[in-house]
Length: 301
Image (cartoon, rainbow, N blue to C red; front, side, top):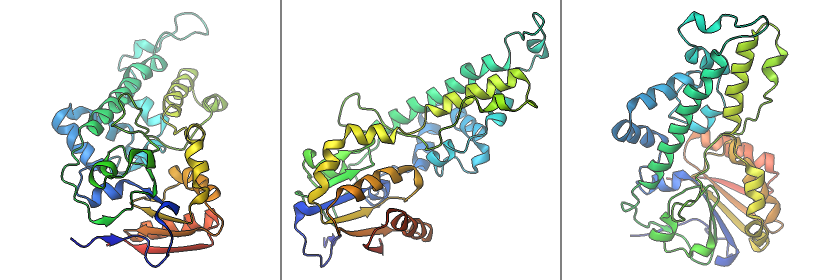
């Protein structure tokens, strides 16, 4: 099988290259690792109610399962609270003047919080069950190059025999027992925000606060992740070329690309592979944000 060369005509040594790999890489290798595959797995192996509840809680984000991370950052605390509101009006009667009995604010952790915990557990279980045996090597990936992958799977190591020491699984590695699988958004909000609106009753202010607190825990800690992998990023000073493949170029993971751009050698060459028109536009935008000087966009067939 003829393999595709991802760095054509650059004349740059293997150990001076960095490959940035996203989920599109696994999808290209026919691995069922899309969010839609996760949805199917949950319906088959878990309670389908979890799928329906996530659709309900994040209904404002259109298709939750099409882009989970984006949807997680677009939550609406009011609609989530409405769903969690107790049906019994007695839960909202006064116990003492100026005080409310346990009600809507207390139901958020036990309903919404528990669903989010179940969702995270299901995600981790699914990741550990993704089958990569279907993957066949059809790309030229040098073993001496460096790799930063957003994927939790070991496709690079098993299918392409890339040494583990050359691969950074920035969001977790399922080959490492107990490693955390990072999934989340980039929208951190002030938990005091609901208290600034006098039109919202106090119990609902508390409830909105609870929702925001829960969802803030789903924000990716990109700064601390980068800091904990500082040694890898510092090692990129030798890299004269970067190839980005299978990445959607969304703003959520932009901090990692920014750190790479400031770590690689000056005048580094970049190839940004894209699949769809939306990817192309996002890639062009990222290149402008990062201030890349020597780059090209290539469609990955």
